[in-house]
Image 1 (cartoon, rainbow, N blue to C red):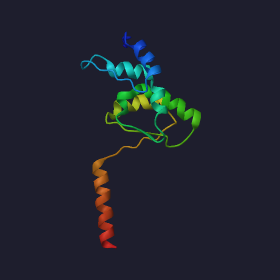
Image 2: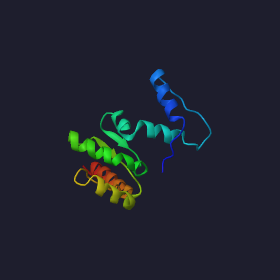
Image 3: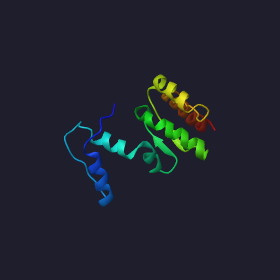
Image 4: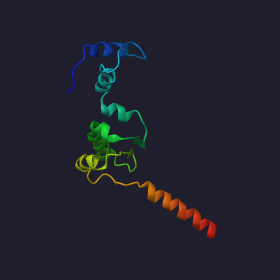
Length: 126
């Protein structure tokens, strides 16, 4: 649950006056949370040209609806590259939010090492 900060209006006004706004304060008081809430996920996605890599996206689940809206609107392949390490937890949310919009690739380091080894072995034999 998000708690509205009294500083939100001050940040908005400062943003209209100055090119850079810096919010400082003690750790864990909600500075980043407040700024993310003010900016919104759609603004975050507009800041980066495709492909937009989103690492460990299970921690940014609020982006999924905006990614879906973008995919529906622009229909460009490869606009977003998502990574995650919590496979089963994230698969449910992805399948519900982005069904028919994405390909899920499971990267297995053992397979990748094996493939590199086979490739280098074949190049030595040839």
